[in-house]
Figure (cartoon, rainbow, N blue to C red):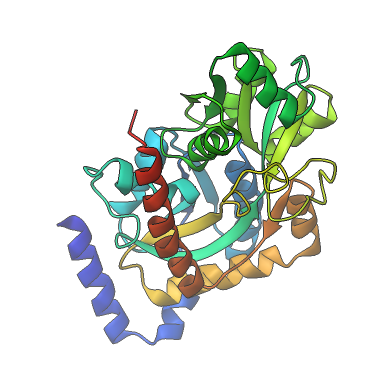
Length: 322
């Protein structure tokens, strides 16, 4: 009810004020990005990179509020219930598209309860083992798991997450048993991989790269349509014979539904301008993250399409909530 009242208030303001004046007046106080993952993850690092520059541009603090847990639902629900005034935003990733499929009781709709702002990045993701692992290649790992007649234990950031489903796809096409092990965030997965507590893990390139360069983590495959410029020696899963893993996920910004369109458009334009900055784009690409800056309409379409694609995968693998 509170959100509906706010929506009516915003609609009344829009009716009475010129569209340009609304965007010019905003923001007049700090802006918060709720991020449904822990500090240290790739979405967290890039959100902070963008937020710092938005703060300079807007003359207002732009803060990050990490709310990991429940496959992004904790953070997303906070934003869905927030006033649609542009001051509480969501910085999230592709798992946002799957939550309603796995948790029908989720008290928000990932499409209808949010206004898309922009997909700000497409990340590259890898499948990796610790360098102490006896497996030097993906083929060796598959052969070893088959010979031992045991499941492959792999880390992912929550049931129904993209990393969870990627592992199931590997099991299907490689013909091996898999045992998914859920975590609250990819930084936590990486910690356990480094500590030898988990056999393998799916991680974004940005999170794994420092450990790869330090010789602590060995990537066996990468989720991209073609070989990465950052990790050119790592084969794509398409090369490895795993179907459907050519397309990576997305990182994007959302607002509560009902947020005035001039505010949405202003945030989109300012973020897109930041993404075209050579320094920012270099920082992102050096982490295996491609700047995007899609329009609100394009990003909304991406989310709708993702919901349908993930629906098919959830049914195929009979993915259940934890």
